[in-house]
Image (cartoon, rainbow, N blue to C red; front, top):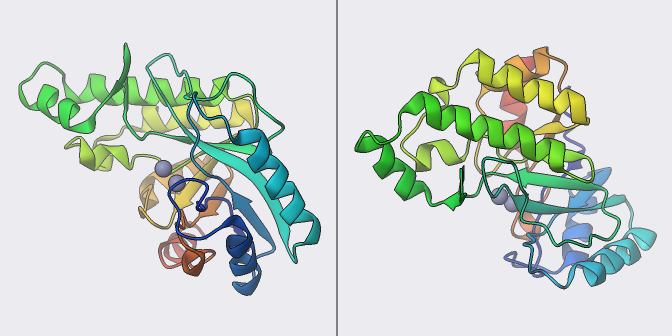
Length: 234
Ligand SMILES: [Zn+2]
Ligand SMILES: [Zn+2]
């Protein structure tokens, strides 16, 4: 059900990882993967993306496993805008991530969301509605096949809990995934989303993929949380 032979979420020295792309590819082969996704962080201002894609394609040509080129991008706002450069080279997929809270007018730091909730300016239901709406719209806005990266990792940072997420929220995300061909990632590093959410999404027919979120070669394709999820889903 979840293919642990494919790791779709890794970072290299191109952004905040510790090892170069070539070492990540070698580590993927050493871990016995059949597919490795390279997915460094981009922003709208990123200028190195064409060079990155070229380097990944060069590595893929001589690699012992399939190498795919993605990037990780944050959801900016409630409208679902993505922090992507305006001109994109050909990418295989996009990791869509909630690194900041996608507010009505742009990203909001999770600490600020926590304060808004504590002082009663925001309520939990509206905050979750906003996050889910933004996430579903971001999937639709992706110009290439999207993967929901570490879904709900933002919640604890905002003082929220995944158990507060309703079935309607999960259904909205499932609908968005099914409409866009999007997948949901089980993230090894952040150990999310939780098993109830993944069970619901998988039950709706959403593809669940594995991502280590490795920032060093030693963590590529190494699973602990993912097999635990897999046991629950099957
Ligand atoms: Zn991330
Ligand atoms: Zn990441």
